[in-house]
Amino acid sequence: MAILLAKSPLSDIAEKVEAGERLSFEDGVRLYETNDILALGKLADTVNRRKNGDVVYFVQNHRITPTNVCAFHCNFCSFRRNGNEPDAFVRTPEQIIDHVGRLFSERTREFHIVGGLVPDLDVEYYADIIRELKDHYPNVHVKAFTAVEIDYMAQISNMDWRTTLEILRKAGLDALPGGGAEIFHPAVRRKICPEKVDGDGWLEIHGIAHELGIKTNATMLYGHIETLEQRVDHLLRLREQQDKTGGFVTYIPLAFHPENNNLGRVKKLDWTTGFEDLKNLAIGRLLLDNFAHVKAYWISLTPRLAQVALSFGVSDVDGTVIEEEIYHAAGAKTEQGLSRAELVHLVTTAGKTAVERDALYNHIAVN
Image (cartoon, rainbow, N blue to C red):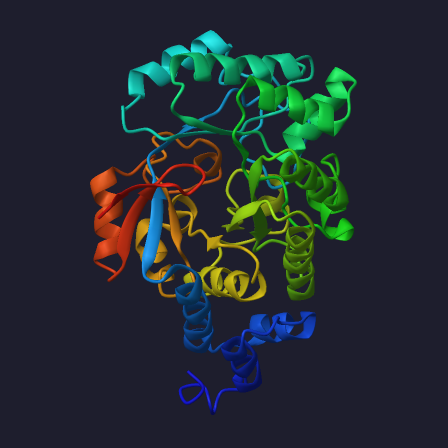
């Protein structure tokens, strides 16, 4: 690698990567400033191969959205409804079970649950959803509710974050998704999601989950009004939290989609490019040295770009998904889901070994 990058402006960073040294804030900014995408890919691939070899993971999962009604008004969201629109919905636990049952496969290993924030529903509504799913499908992991949802249900229920998480864990919660992180910097948050729990709170909620034995993921929403420095700050704060509590499993950079939301309209923002998407995946792999996995979320990226990303530090392509509603409301043109065979083909034709996993990365099958 050192020979390949000897003439690159990133040669000193390459030396650090080769030596296994932690990269600095300044290194992160330089990585974002470079246009040498192949050098970035090579560096990230080197780090990923050390951690995961040529293995790429996927899961047979099912997205569940309890509601699109939301008390918050995030400027980048195309999904939320006030509650009085014809397409607004709040699904009861029984309705969710009925809906899941029509699409459930015996090979499903994970339910991934995120949705809006309904003003009059406390933690028991969310706990009931988990209990019902566990009663009907005891062998399926439940990865549910972002830190933003945890914070809101705690407020509605007049309890603290730890108590809220303990109730959900007792109901059967296995893991937390990584959504709601957006960009931690307060100046950005004030403009795009001022009602959400702040960056410190998001990190603390995940830290409490880790202390309770609940594994979690982490995300960053990029491609809107944030600066390169704010991206690096976000990543290093994730790295710092991982040093403290160690419960993050996967990092997922999420590209901003500009359709049908105020941020895209007012700022006249465009879609991120494939170049930018690959850069964010690679830099995430390089800066988050204490994370096991970086995921290319094919719903956002498209399957073809997700496949290219397997050479840019990525070790996970998410899963079958089945039904995705939030990104598609913002203009995503990808399918609602992919079959197991399609995911295996995507990975193996990139020269990688496809490994089916569960929500906690236990191996189900090697392909």
